[in-house]
Image 1 (cartoon, helix red, strand yellow):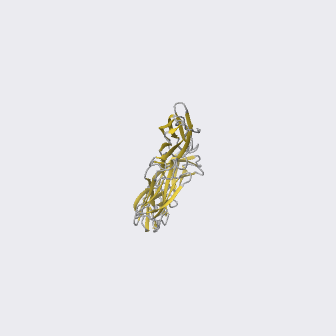
Image 2 (cartoon, rainbow, N blue to C red; image 1 turned 60 degrees about the vertical axis):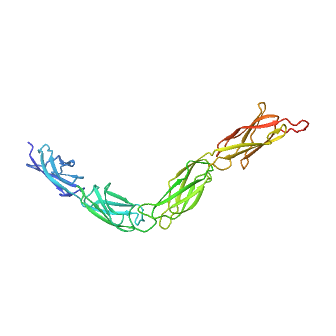
Amino acid sequence: MASPTVTLVTASPNPAVSGQSVTLTATVIPLGTGTPTGTVTFVVSGGPTLTGTLSDGIASVTASGLSGGTHIVSATYNGDANFTSSTGTTAVLVIPASTTTTVTSAPDPSTPGQSVTFTATVTPVAPGAGVPAGMVTFTIGGSGGGTFTQPLSGGMATLSLSTLGVGTHAVVAAYSGSTDFLPSTGTDTHTVNPGPAATTTTPTSSVNPSVFGQPVTYTATVTPDPPASGTPTGSVTFTITDPDGVTSTQPLMGGTATFTTSAPGTGSHTVTATYNGDTNFATSTSAPLTQVVNFANSKTSISSNPNPSEAGTPVDFVAFVEAIPPGDGTPTGPVTFTLTNGVDTITSSPTLDANGFVFLERALTAGNWDVSAVYEGDANFGASGVSEYIQVVTEPDSGTVTTTMS
């Protein structure tokens, strides 16, 4: 017949701190001769279930990750051929682990308006282990400071401020603790040196979209970022993308700078304005502004000399192509003349000169000739033309000898 047993269970250390491993030991005492063999099952309330093998009547296991509070441990000897099972219990107290809190700031020192990140790191004090959770309260002294509560993530809490004034600021980071970890506090100092304040540069366009040749005034406004105040001085560099690029540096007056140009061709152009800074204010570059330049409208006019003319006498036809305001500049490319009397048609496409004129000389037969001049447009100017122009050609005086030119 199997002999009864008594199981005793102990825990070490007891109490333990959060994160500390606890050794559970079961001693199985036989109420008869011999030594019990087999296994012991340890059940930890709010924790793991573990199995240990008896050696000389003793089984030990290690429980880790126990949360703060009291845990009841039940150790059940599962018996063997000679000994019956038995159960023993004990209690393990897990108390919060001590912590240390450190706090740093970066960059340190900083300048007015510069963003500063404060970082609090909470770590357990050995033999405590694990990753503390909960909240950290930052208290930042001095101008622009205050009290701010931030959550821990991975044992770290961060706070970013860009409001600190010039001077030395006392920094306190207080961890409020949790079920598993005790509160702790860290201190530091942060220095804000006098220096250029951050700025924001914003460009605007006087007309957008514009047309080719139209003067456009770009205005850049430079403002200090809060809490800084005052009026920046110095200069602003305007940059406009173009096949050749357009760059101009203009003085800043009353916080604004202007630049007027009609240079960019048709298409979309990126405009940026860069403030070059001064003693009190830092440089800044604007977000890009898109300037759209469309085709300019053109106007074509024609004239002839002489009109009326005599048959066989050369006639000088002149077409002039110009930009219609607000467009500006000189159109380029061909102008197509078409002369017809209903029977004969003459077509020619001479090219505009540097002043926007094009010339055609022809001798015509007698009759009324419809004359048109059509400008086909170019990369910057739209097409235009004249279709209602009459060249009157009379018969030559009788007895007059004329020479026909073609």
